[in-house]
Image 1 (cartoon, rainbow, N blue to C red):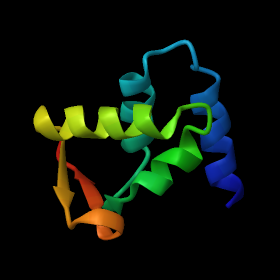
Image 2 (image 1 turned 90 degrees about the vertical axis):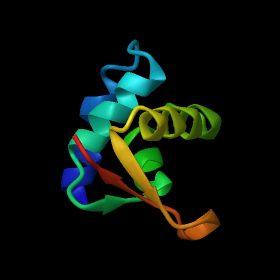
Image 3 (image 1 turned 120 degrees about the horizontal axis):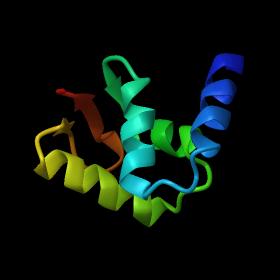
Image 4 (image 1 turned 60 degrees about the vertical axis):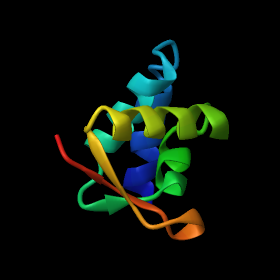
Length: 79
């Protein structure tokens, strides 16, 4: 838990970056599957709609894969 808090602080320091870059940075720290909530915890300064839009674009660009529907949705890093 402490390590995740440190990661969130490191990502938050780059708050001047566009939302998609902050989400990309958060994803790079995740192994295996992750959820939208995982990204929210790592990027607390981003709105939910910014995170959702960034995840959607990363799926469209083939950087991550989406599995499941609704609350059961998980993502997997491909690149």
